[in-house]
Amino acid sequence: MLRFNNIGKNYAVGKQQVAVLQGVSGELAAGEMVALCGPSGSGKSTLLQILGALDLRYQGEIEFAAKPFPRTAPAATLLRRQQLGFIFQRFNLVPVLTAEENVMLPLQLRGWSTEQQLQAARAMLTQVGLAAQLQQKPAALSGGQQQRVAIARAMVSRPALVIADEPTASLDSVSAQQVINLLRELCHQSGSAVLVATHDPRMAASCDRTIRLHDGRILMEAAA
Image (cartoon, rainbow, N blue to C red):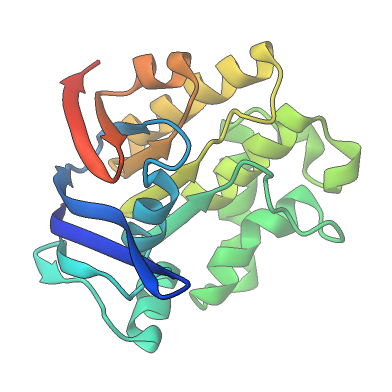
């Protein structure tokens, strides 16, 4: 579903070029949850930015659903809107919107009718265990509940690829385990590929595979 080959990325530091990614290659299959692990500075966030079509300035080739990855901003925006979902460490919910309205957002961007948005958002929030919190705003929710809203928002449109950046880092151990179990269940049910950057060994152990980065290179790949 997603293949990336020989991905490189340099940043300018003064007059020098610093290599953040060096010849990184791999693939993700539909319905597979893959952990991206490595110490701080290993290149995890940079690779997520590239595979999430947020950073278009890189070396190498990416193929998505048997087609070349977009290399222009308008095409990348369209891909993110139609095919990708994102889950963030800090949830990134819109504070003035209810849980239901937050989950409706990606469907609005796709041009769904209001009735379709409502039905899909309510069904998704019920699936993540928040049927009683539809009308609550983020400030009224616990951290674990906010992350479940964020997961529902990312998954409601059944995206081909979900990019998750440290989704359990801001949670207590109980909430983190709930999020891990939920994300794995939704990944396998929906058929979405999920790439999770994480330092959490429980999250890595729950994934189908682990890719380990070190100094911008793949150190190893291993099944969970």
